[in-house]
Every structure is written in C-alpha cells, then in structure tokens.
View 1 (cartoon, rainbow, N blue to C red):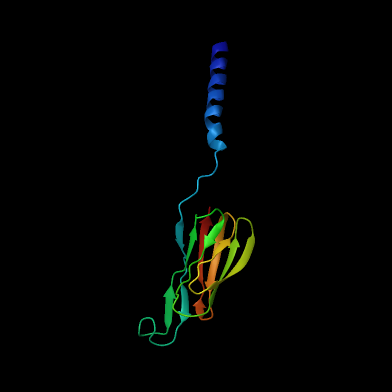
View 2 (view 1 turned 90 degrees about the vertical axis):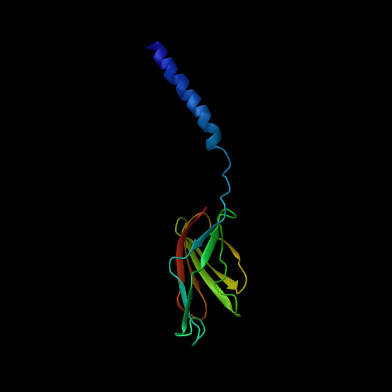
Length: 137
C-alpha cells in the first residue's frame, strides 16, 4: 500500500510539472479571420445601378479579427462613392458597446475587447443594416 501511495504521489507531481509550462505560456496569436456578416446590407441605389432590373443593391459586410487581440477591422462594403458608414457594435461578453464612423475606402480598427461581438453596419441609404455576430480573440 505504501508503494502504491508513493507511486500515485509521484505520478501526480510529474503531471503537474508537465502541465505548468503550458498553463503559464503566453497566448499564441491567432491568424487573421474574415467573418462574413450573417445578414447582408441592402441599400437603395436608384434604378439600373446594381442588376439593371431593380433599385436595391446588397453586399455582405465583413469583420476581420485575430490581427491584434480584442481589435476588429471593418472594411467598407462599397468604395465607389463619397460618404460614411457607421458600425454599431456590442461586446456581448463584456457588455461594452460603441459606434465607429468609417470613411468610404478606409478600414479602421476598433477595440471591442475579447469575446462574442455583435455588429451592424449602416449608411445613409441602407434599407436593411448588415448584421453579424462573431468571436474576437
């Protein structure tokens, strides 16, 4: 019995020593991930502009995560006109929220913090805001 107790103790110590470096290692940077919004942005563009038969255009906004911890980049949906986009975001994990103003052609980085983030992209002409939920490492 004494040898069994000693063997269990030695195995436990060896397991703890093997796990300790992994538990205290710095986090590994994730590769950038492009997250496509689940609901596309739809805007009124006037007649004949997008498909030639209707006045509405649509595109899927994206959020790029993983370049820097807690930071998200929101590239614009279309860059061929002047004006601004607005991205309204909420970090569901921390309950922080904010609004970022994006000039067309710019792709600003927004600090949302780590966690599950919900974002909606709007502009002056949207009929349906592009909306997505994604994880920010």
